[in-house]
Image (tube, rainbow, N blue to C red; front, side, top):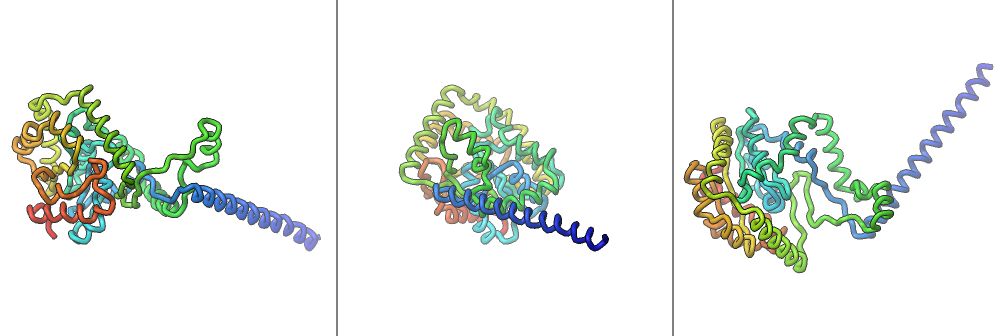
Length: 338
């Protein structure tokens, strides 16, 4: 009886082993088929940005050798971290810029962190310092402060590898999303016009036609916005930025440094900014009133030399030269040590 029972019990074990193996093979075949299909449609693997990825980078900004890039798309798609590391080997570049969001809430978060005493390059123009725009990055800060844990840190590290090598890692390629989209509009998923590294730095992908279209769209949107929402008078704008000066002072009192930076723009982006927020009435008054450290592209010929195909962002293949020019300016001005 014992031998018979033992023999009987082994059969189900083999059955489940075969079933699990077949299930895994079927799942793998489906994944490979889906991956092949989406690649045939022109999609490629790429890192996708998120509050979790931002938080992973934010968690690294805890030492005096941190060089933190805070800003929006002109920094996220303009700064080339390998060039920073090459020219400033003693610094750790950290990308906290967020596409489409002005950065002052991130600066406040760094000021409120007693451990942070690094260097901040704060990419922001006069419009980005209007009080209505201060908190655009606050959802990222809130996620970092209240939801990000060591478990999510590890999860995101694995997710970076998954996204780097597969197209089906995108939520838009899931079975449920594909079915819902097919029943709704039938349109294919959006193809991002940018590429990111796991460091969150990246570059925009331009064609001559898309660059012209973007330049027109950016210009039209900015003009309409400024007409509908005129900037506050310069004296009101300046008074409200007393809080910005306090955040900067807090960081610098701990041994850190904050460098305000207005990156290069051209065409309508430049002319509209100058019409609604003249540099001598806004930017220059801010720097002189609060005795801030700043770099403005309008005062630096080396930065003005870089083309912006969409009038707002440097070309992807110019990022290393652009970054080198900016870092060299910082070295020449004694703001960082090579």
